[in-house]
Length: 131
Image (cartoon, rainbow, N blue to C red; front, side, top):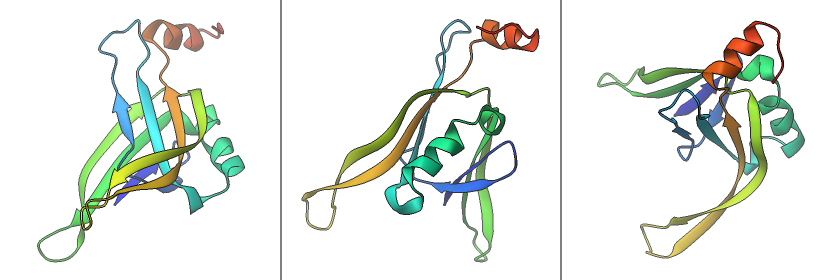
């Protein structure tokens, strides 16, 4: 199971299609594409959730699985900070392959693309200077 834990310690289950695109440069914004099931919440609630910079200032991507003894264990727990800018938000059709029949199958996800402030933007924000 994959969960996203927000700065206020609330957690939401997300889909495996969630991806982080690091820029590799302090001058270019990194991006995070968050996918949730369409029926997880209304679009307006999803928008309110990912548009709150207080919540998205620290995001933890937590993947859990079952250990050998059947108990839930943490597979990975990664912290991402300053993903406070919403680049895009909405519903998106995602095409997949049904491996049992070989036929293409599609589903609709709630998708938000969040961008991380660059290093300079983060330093200016710490000084109280808006970008």
